[in-house]
Length: 325
Image 1 (cartoon, rainbow, N blue to C red):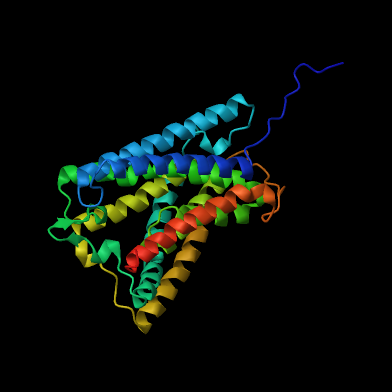
Image 2 (cartoon, rainbow, N blue to C red):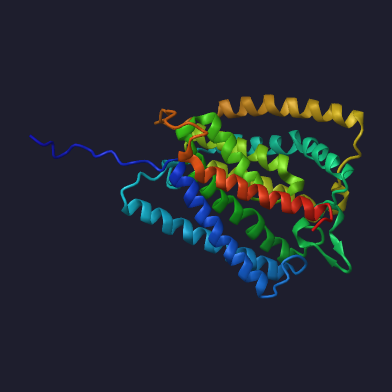
């Protein structure tokens, strides 16, 4: 006798589905970016043109994201629960997330400076610090010299949009898809993609660390909203600091004392983050993550393609900073 009320288990969004969905979204976003570039828009020195371009790209990004997930739902795939933004948000957890954001910025800023110092010995020129002035025009992306209306718009396009849309992609889709290979692999692999696809050589280390922390927060709480808040605060503090303090935030001179301080700060940062993450209230129904696929399996070829593509973007940005291209 057939049980009518028996629940049918839906297939989950695994590493293969997640990686190919990611590639499709990035490809379409890249085409939109190419179209914007072909239009002659000055996205480097003209603040408003750059802002409109970013809104268009993120809009295409978000639109395709929901189209893909709508199709996955129609095909009976189980959509990752972390993407459900209707979950209850704890003010206690939000308080810890604010502290996590502060520790992430302060604890590892010298680590980022150290990486940048190594690149400078190779002749690398930092966009954020050394290329803000291009003739009489300023590179708006560093936030230096923004007017109040520009600053408000920048909060929207540099802080809010990336926090929501990038978290949907990297933590809502990629992280959950990669958990079939184990939590540790999923955390590191999603952070690698997050760092590479920004194409920002200066912030490579910081974005990798931020990617790891956001992934840990999502896996602990089961709520993507906390990662969005963390991401927003990270970008907001950076933007606000460069807007109102500006060029005085240049990297500290690199010497043995700076290296010692870097190690101490990073160590304290790790210890504080471990404590803060442990203090987060976990979600009630924590799913048991089982490792069902091997990392080097051809089943995950889409992820490796994504890494190669992201690596090419990063290398191109590095060569541009070295003046090769």
